[in-house]
Length: 149
Image 1 (cartoon, rainbow, N blue to C red):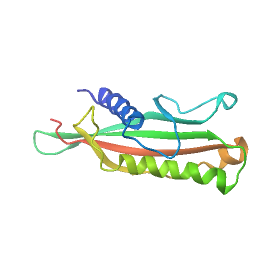
Image 2: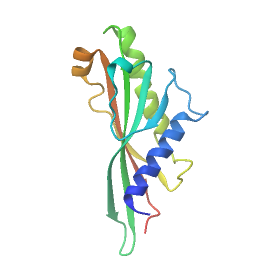
Image 3: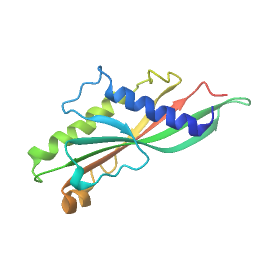
Image 4: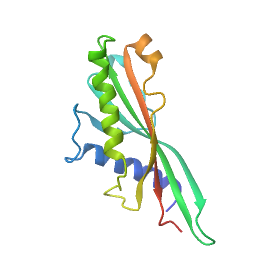
């Protein structure tokens, strides 16, 4: 399977996992696959969760096999009424819940791909918060397919 197909398959699988009935988060949202994690502020209500393709890579495993790596980003966006801890802390908690939910996960609809690592840096975008009153956090997640040839 071509790497570009891999990344779209993984993105769709992550959307499916985040929206599944076994995903239990303290706040509700519906994940969507997009190419840009942008939203019109005037239309922003509730929490938006976008899964975006980021990068693909192949590494040699042996003389005749490779392993494929797929990197995606999960963006959490929410308009905030105020900049208090009571408003922002639950959003930070949701980001951590998503990271914990995906940690060590093998994707149900794409069982050849499993979680490799994730990163959440910076944990939120201070400029968006200050200038736009929008909480923005991006999690970068890498999935690996070790059965690749």
